[in-house]
Image 1: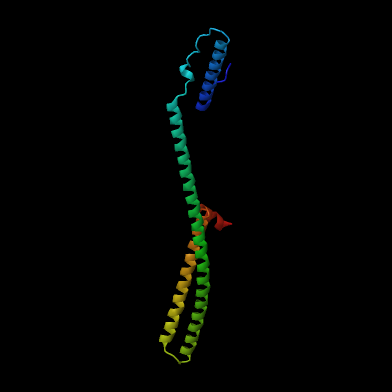
Image 2 (image 1 turned 60 degrees about the vertical axis):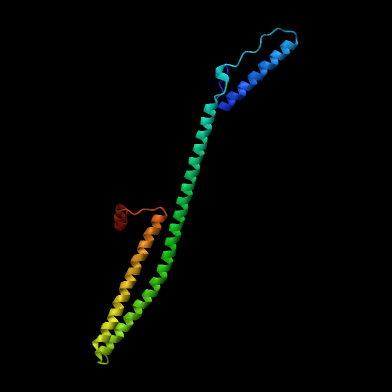
Length: 177
């Protein structure tokens, strides 16, 4: 039993091979003095269906275009992810510098406040100077806490950009360990 061709190109190749074989056989038989009838016309099954060939090519081109689009989307997603990671790493580095600077400012204003309180106790200055020093100290603390909050947010965004997630259930189990 002959195996049926699977693809259109195999069918066309088989058609051409069978047709050529029949023509050669007929020509040799005629040349040898045989009175062979003309070769049979090809059967309808053996002729390639050009509309299906073109339909297959169109489907193939569409599949290649969809694949290329998916590759481009994936590439874009990866680039965006790398950009987010880099942005959050840069933000964390910058916030670390700001935190160190503001921590020094808090320590400096705490010293200034303590000195203002000593001078006030000795009667050298008015309470206005103590109040101004205290205001500067509290403002430095607020700025320091704000920077710490921004660092925590940047850390969360970095973990998210790296593909991790934050869920309350994870936080609850981590706190009990």
